[in-house]
Length: 122
Image (cartoon, rainbow, N blue to C red; front, side, top):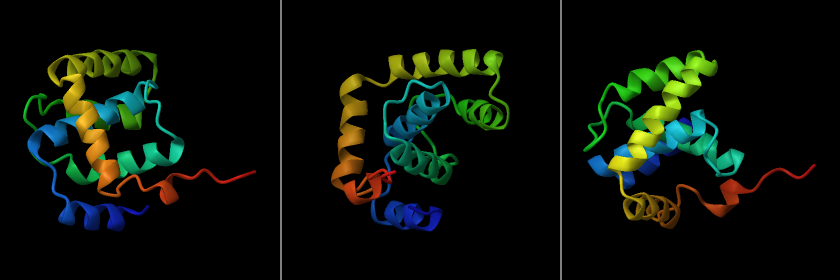
């Protein structure tokens, strides 16, 4: 999936502020290595994050976006620890049912379409 395809998807499926927080939390999980999504799904989620990072969230501190920017540029052990702390905090302010609902919604609406998720065979 390309950035343009994600932008098109977002125009048809705008995210609510809490869903923006959910996408941000997923990006934190990707950065700290705790995300269990397939590599192609992680790539799509990173594109989604890039497309929504300037939109207002509901519960997360907007400063988290600067941390994510820094971590993407330099992910050493100290930065990974900072990301971990923010990820844990995000998971405490976004309930598990809300997060699961977000993931189900983006799958149902085709962002993580199974044909886009297939890994290339060796």
